[in-house]
Length: 426
Image 1 (spheres, one colour):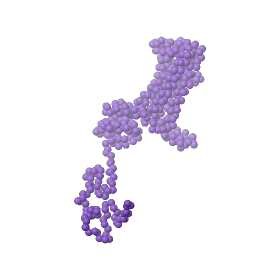
Image 2 (cartoon, rainbow, N blue to C red):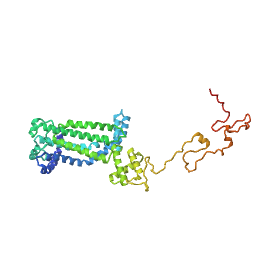
Image 3 (tube, rainbow, N blue to C red):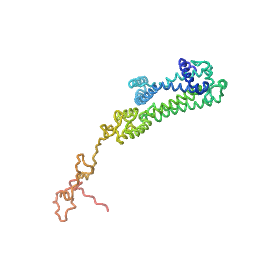
Image 4 (cartoon, rainbow, N blue to C red):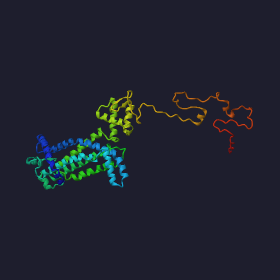
């Protein structure tokens, strides 16, 4: 770790200068030799760095979502060229170039923050070794060595021996208890941050290897922090715990206000937006208008949560517009239904199927025809033609038809001579 930290010694002077400037402010409030003054200086350094990294964080979010979108295409390339690794790599690079994505963009905040992390480690390690570094002179070095955070010196480690800890004015028990608690909090915050990303802000409609990798990292990162944390000074643990808490809060804000399409977070967000819009009959915030505009532009490609949102507005008498606003349904613009057609368009109804006897008798059942004509009724008994009367209804004594002539078939019977029925068994 010392070798890696020495590689970033070129940035130790700026880092030490920032810490000293914050220390001069907090030292006037809490005392220059207190752990509060030095601890809050490290926390302020983290906040300053993370504010500067916000543009990279936004780029990371866009890159992560772009990678999630490309996962189906990447999986097809892997299956198509599974026996040709070189061709597979070429097709992957071609896909990245065509879509304008970069897999390393999701790692930019961590990579950009690493030099400051190792520079701080180098500064604190020099304080523990009683060496001046950067702008930290002998007076500030003595003040930093006297600083204790909950009884643990700022430059002490979990693995330090009792003699080194006593030289810093503390006991090995206090150092190990404080560092153990901070390592547990650091690992827990990392686990919770990754878990809320996997359970709330991942598109559940697409099952890709990317999701499996993220799920694996949810358990790997906390273990890595626990293993490496025992070699971190207390000041570095303060730094890393602060940056984990910042990341967790930043991610919660993004999940709450700009969730991934198709995720559970989007379903919750659209439910809140639906209540807000139906109560006020308008979209108030610019961010909400941008999301409504994106949903309307998708058309038939909307997911189930977005279709539910659009249909909910239609039921409430509102219509989403292409510019992200909403109007009442009786205005010039109309809402877009689930299938992409205007909500007020009547659907074509299929006529009901008639039975065989109804078709033969001319009876029409069901609704009126498209021309609003009166349904046909069956012929009455008096209007029925005589030839249609059944043979059993003839009066007794009536002359039988001449031999060799065929009787007219009853309705529903075949024409021609009928096969005699076999006598029933009694």
